[in-house]
Image (spheres, rainbow, N blue to C red):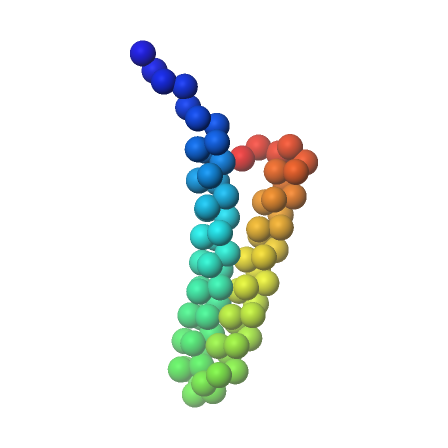
Length: 75
């Protein structure tokens, strides 16, 4: 007999994934900035710019996902 899936468990993983998504955007932005700085020998400039852009991109994505949930969109 198949057990019923706990709906709360699914939402925990969903919201944890949103947090991971924010971190990944920030890290990828920082990595791209670091690699550009290393290539052009301009150490903190691109690192700072792309870290900020990655963080902003992550927050925008989190905002879109949470807004979609509020409106009743699919997960």
